[in-house]
Amino acid sequence: MTPIVEVEGVERSFGNTRALCGIDLVVPEGRVVALLGPNGAGKTTLVRILSTLIPPGAGKARVAGYDVVQEPVAVRRSIGLAGQYAAVDETLTGRENLEMVGRLSRLSKSLARERAQEVLSRVSLVDAADRPLKTYSGGMRRRIDLGAGLVAHPRVLLLDEPTTGLDPASRMDLWAYLRELVAEGASILLTTQYLEEADQLASEIVVVDHGTVIASGTPLELKQRFASDVLDVTVGDLDSLDRSVSALDGVGSERPTIDRHTNRVSVPVSEGVATLTVAVRRLDDAGVRPIDLSLRRPSLDDVFLTLTGHTTGDGESEEITP
Image (cartoon, rainbow, N blue to C red; front, side, top):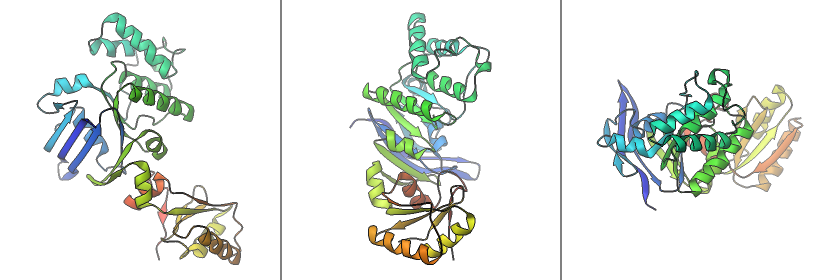
């Protein structure tokens, strides 16, 4: 596949902090590549470099065939950008915001109006199109901000956590729209904290941590390489949770992890159903009566936990240590 985004050995530091330590990345034309990593891994820094907002400290990056340092204007004409925070004018209506972006993208007045209407429909804001943005909710503003990056039908979309703040229905609507754009030839580099989003949309996933690529591959490849089947046990109270951890320690291929928000203990296992039988006996001996017990195939959350040592939500999971 012809690459639409090429990143070679890109580095970037802020003072004594190294945000990127020689990143290599390729986004094939007409594909979605998801960039995953914990907070502070360097994802947003890379997006800012690719969108010409900041220069790389070292290395090279090209977007749609244009060098981000030598040809920044051409790069900007080729991309649509939606950052982590809504960049909209609250004094204008939703429609006016989108038409303004269209005109700034050198669309004719009539085409800007047509594209704005199309985007309003796609992001489910037709009914609110002529209200000032200061009356919009946070999620509605986010949708307008996303729409602004789509008005010009760019060849490359740089989406930095695009669905943060959206309700589940709006998130799925946006997924459907992004799939349509890719089917029409668009290419997308996506950062997200929603691993299901990456699983749903991306043909390839690149995992970064501490400014370095630590794994890449299709969602299926990553699950097969870095995660085992997982035994999940959900209980009704904290006392049962602690006893479950003690009972299940040593059952799986790794130590149990706890999610105290859901009273769930998870254990990676390598022997499937045989391990399930042992786990049930141990829980019964410990006097634990689970609300739910299941053996499931690994998810991207499990891959992320294996690679980085924690989940995408800081503090949501803890590893049990001796």
